[in-house]
Length: 230
Image (tube, rainbow, N blue to C red; front, top):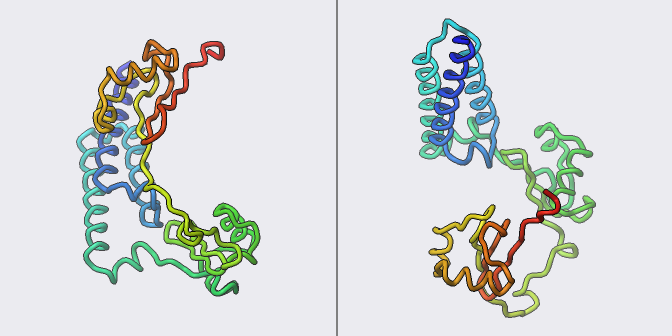
């Protein structure tokens, strides 16, 4: 029993250590995974895994190892921010694989991609033929950015001389039957207003609401719990 308790304690502490380590490294660890970031994630996972199943490794050693690695990653990120020349080595660089409608085979080979993979990435951006692509760039995180040819580009409101209102972000008011008070206050409303809006849709309890969203110049969008499906 003590063995399982020890594993539980080490795993919990390791989770906390890794959580703060990843928070220290910033959101780019999740949204823009570079080769360096991938190595970082693998090393952190390996440190925790070895610590849990190696009984000779103490809790303090786990914290020390994760802390040192987090500091190294943080310092590296600071270096790439302050010294432009280091970014190419540590983060990589974008590669133009389609230039003026022509596929650059050397750049494609450098990015370790074949034609089928390029087509797949282009389709994920909404273009189903390479003939529609004027430029395509493989970013450092492996994603592709596409600039379509003029004939296949989507016209903008300014192109059509259409006047439109400035866009506004939707705000979540209720999630899983609970009011998000901060969002409600940010929208400039209170619970009395929210109750009135719900009553307009014949809803009298927050617990009956799965999701509610407010957007400027729009009525409150409400999704009720489907009790029959539960």
